Amino acid sequence: MSWLDDITWSADGLVPAIAQDAATGRVLMVAWMNREALQLTVEKGVAVYWSRSRNKLWRKGEESGHTQTVKEIRLDCDADVILLQIEQHGGIACHTGRESCFYRKLDNGQWQTVEPVLKSPDQIYSR
Amino acid sequence: MSWLDDITWSADGLVPAIAQDAATGRVLMVAWMNREALQLTVEKGVAVYWSRSRNKLWRKGEESGHTQTVKEIRLDCDADVILLQIEQHGGIACHTGRESCFYRKLDNGQWQTVEPVLKSPDQIYSR
Figure 1 (cartoon, chains in turn purple, blue):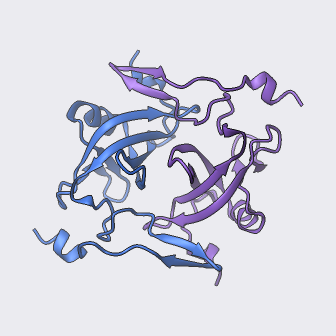
Figure 2 (tube, each protein chain N blue to C red):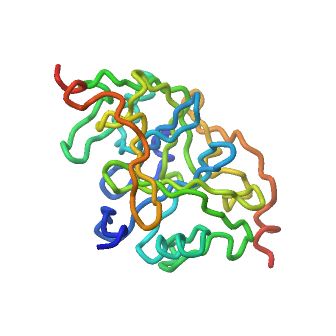
């Protein structure tokens, strides 16, 4: 019986994982993990997700360099959501070049972009 | 065209919503919303979710009194996760009587409960 068996995996064998900046408390992104991704995350100490669009393991930062060192891993009461406390290298979690993926705010019935692009995606993904 | 149409709803018409304590930055819980739940949340200024287990709208706190006043609503880059900044009334978000649902921490290959029950569920749900 492994700690991985305590998790309520979806029918697809996935669980959503929230990445929260350990220093600032900002919620940076939400991605998915399968068993292997979570096991690798624990083993390596850096966030590894499962990309549903590419259907493969996604070592966060493998292209961008924006890796995430994992400080703590928590599980919720229903055992179906993971919360990671991370250190975000480069200060950018979002593929749009922003610190956080949650850069749109509902304001007067519209989603307003309220956070700057810190580095253009062209620059981030050029190598 | 409504702001609700900007959201990438799941096949079931749902989107996960993270509730974060606006004052402390703690991630308190994750629940689901359908269009009606999110619209009601905006209209009322208090969190309304969709209960997948009970298959109905869940006005958070309707039984426990632990309502959530919503201060801000954000959307992520993929438009498939909502982040709420909330004020948690009673200081308890979890049905186990804990502040946060994320009370288990991975420690040496085991999920350890690291947060106290502030009020027993018997007391919370007795009325």
